[in-house]
Structures are given as structure tokens and as C-alpha cells.
Image (tube, rainbow, N blue to C red; front, side):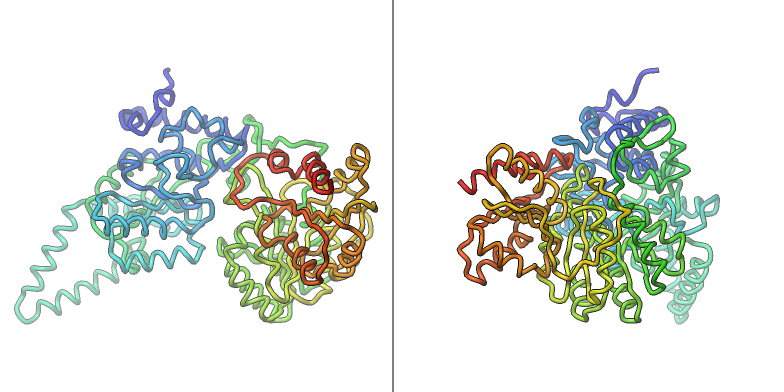
Length: 624
């Protein structure tokens, strides 16, 4: 049997494929998805679930003339394959390769860059409104999963779209939430009659005829409308969307291409905002992903035969797991500890806590702003909430951090996983801005551990500060220190000297401590430069006593951070030096003023001079 997928180098090639070949093509696409993600990692289960849906969309619509916005975008792999990127697909999420998310710079078929959830309807509506103003003629679509419907921005967009009455198609990919149980013959029947143009015309003609009846026409029509609405609330799914101003179609089988084609072809003739409800199976076609869709939502390399993750047995424990353990240890001692996550129970290490203390655990869905203010309310109620969230996701709740937590000085502890460069997920997920957007907020303590044991000590110590605290740490394994040692009670703002030397002072924060220390050793061995290394620990408050001592002793100070240089830790040190009128020269090492591309963390550190050799070179040039 010939491989159909090998013949598809563009969306035009795909449109030439006969419908009877779609089943084989879907199977070939799934095999390619499994093969590539088993090697590169990526979002497997979401893509396995939308193979037929993506095929139907590209058959019914004309991309790139028609604009498709993929919410989050982690389910757009098939879209990439069908729009001319099949041969490049093996480079997915690799340095210099295809992005794991839609990217306008990558293809004209990617209408909008995405990476975080809940944005698609707003973006697709904006594209539609621009189309109307420009008097253009194309379809604008948003493809959004049911999980994203926990994000408040979705409802803001639905409200605006329903009010605007512009032509917009929202495709709801329902793979878990079961918005409506009415999946079956009755629902398919309603979907068929509602997608038939004759139905809309007949409905309009009958309404007009009734209204022309002398004297009683308007009241009869009004009564009929009320009866119809009451019946629709009982037997018709999707009435919520109808009330929001959308014409609702579905639910329809998201793996039945012919049914979806019938619906998509017909909705193109219907005006105004439309919502097509498609039911799919997450992880479809690969048994491990079907049975454990949450585990295969985002994966690293794995064995195709078993689905077992490929891990380095010698790798140290991850920061996430270390946090998971210390959280439970503290909760064992304190019954006022509450944990909150925004749909990332496993990713942020809260599963262990949730199993042991379910009554003190809250997963709010993809609603980061709500998570923060919920935590503020819990703190105002006298408890100690711990909000565990990815660094890049907390950006979405900045106002809530400022207004609802810090302004009131509520003792909320933010635990920011995936801080700094995260690797293959790229610029939408790099957590390189948190030091900059947090350190200027009054009342907030910001700190970052040098290793796993210091993370444990920082978390335990945070409860004694009685104020808002943010602890940030990187993705992946720690440095391999012994985590069985007694915990240190870290004094607020206190730094730690790791090495003494008389030529230059290196002040790293967090994940940059280990490379800074190794660089100092190499500077001594190879360049005869002796460096003092001070683990800052705190970005806010700074250890001013230690900084005074360094500025009085050293002519050269180097700051190192896994954060952008603008407004980060190095900027805080510069501000201190300026405020106290020191003549000390400062070299700041961190991420430059650009969005850092995807690629392995180690490669990015080397490329931007933040690995050991790059630090040695920069310091040597600086002091000479």
C-alpha cells in the first residue's frame, strides 16, 4: 500500500486526496505524530485527537486565505503537516526547526501566534473585524478546546463576538468536559436540520407569515418563540451559546470526516457568529495516550512500544518533585496550608498533595488570574495558600498579584516552576521575565534557590516571613545535592558566600549559582583570577550589608541571572550602586532584549554566553 502522506507537500495536495483515502491518511498522520514526539517530545495526546477534525477543516476551508487560529496551538501539528511542512516535521521543537506552536514567521498558514490558552476567539474576532473594515471576503475561525473554556478571556470574547454579529466560526473541540451529554441520534438529527439552509429559510418564512396575522400575529409569534425557547432548553444542546448570540451546531462526531464536512460546508452559508461543537477523543489511535491522556498531553521522549518515558537513571531529582515533597512535609505540620493550581496539577508537582489533602487542594482550571485572587481570599480568611504555577503563566495574573495580594500584604506563597529558559517549548513558555515583573512590586519577597536543598529551606522559611513571597526555580533536574540534610532557616534577605577571592566578585541568583561557581574555579585554574562568589538568594530584598562590603572591596562586580537583563537582578544591583554612589564597575550577564528561540537549555546557555566557558571569557575581558 502506497504512503498517501508522502504525496502531500501543500494544502492543495491534500485537497486532491479522495474521501475514501482519508481513513488511511489519518492513520499515517498518527504514526508520524507518534514517531516524531517519541523522539522530540511534544504535545501528543491533543494532536492525536484532532487528526480528522484538522483534515475536515482544511478540506472545507481554504488556508491561508481563510484564517484558522488555534487556541494554545499545541494541537496544530497536523495543521503544520498539511500546510507544506511535512518534510520538516522531524525538526519539531528542535533548535532551528519547526515550532511546537503556530508561528506566523514560519508559514502564511499560521494566522496568529499562540502558546497560552483562551486567546483564539479574541484573535479570530479581531481578524474578522479587520476583514470587515477592509471589505475583504474570507472566513475567520477559532479552534478551541473545552479545557480553555475555564479561561475567563474566552467569555469576554464570546460576549463581544455575539454582540458584534460579525461572521465568525468558533470550533469547540470537546474532548473531556462533556459540555452536553446529547451525543447520539437525536443530536445528530438536530445538527443536520440546523445546518441545512432550507431550515433557516423556512423558519424565517413561517415567522413572517405568523406575524402578518391581523391583531393576534405578534402575540402568537411571541408565544411561539417562548415555547420554542423552552423546548430548546430541554432538548437542544448549546443553548448557552445561543443566548450569547451564537448559532450553535452540534455536538458532532469529531472523528467522522463526512459529517464534519457536511456541517462545515453548510455553516459557511450562515451569517453571524457560529459555534460548531465537535466531540473528539484525546489520544485517539495510540493506546497509552488513550488510557492516560493527561500523561501524554505533553511528553518527553518515550518508547513507542510501551509509552514508557525515556529518562536518564542517573539524573538528579527534579525541582518539581523536590517541591512536591517539601509541600507535603510542611502540610503535615501545618493544617492551614492550602494548595492552588491552574490546571497544572501534575506539571507543578501538586498531585501528591492533592491525594493526601484533597479538601485543601483547589484546581481552578486555566484561570490564572482567578487562582491568584482566590489565594488572596483564602489568605484573608486566615490560611496560608501556596499557588504553584509556571513562571510564564503567572504573567497572565500580574494585576491580581499587585492589587489583590501585595497591596494587602497577604501571605500568599507563589511557587514559580519553569523559571528561566525552558528549552524546546520556546519563547511562549520561557520564564525569563518574572524577576523583572515581580521585583518592583511593594511588599513582595522574591527569591531563587541555588539547588534542591535550598529550595526546601526557602519554602519552609517563607512561612515565617508573613508577607507575599515568590520562589522561582528552573525546569528539570536539580544539581544532585543531598536533600536529607536538616533544613536551614534562611533569614529574610540574607545572601550566602560560596567562594572567596580578591580579584572580582560574582553575584549569581538561582540557577546561575552552579555555573558561576564552576566559572570561578576555572578562572582561578586557567586565568589566575580569584573570584568571590556570593549566592544572592534574594532579588528582593537585597542583602545590602553584603553588597556594601563587596562594593568597598572590589572594583569589578559581575551579576548573573536566568532572566532578561532589563529590570532584572543585575538592574537591582546597579540601582543599589548608583543610590550609594559607588564607583564599582558592573557587568550584567543574563538574557538579552529579544525573545529567545527554542532549543535545549544547555545550547541556549552556550549560545548566549551563560555557560561556564562563556562566563569565564566575559569576566576575563571585563576585568582586563
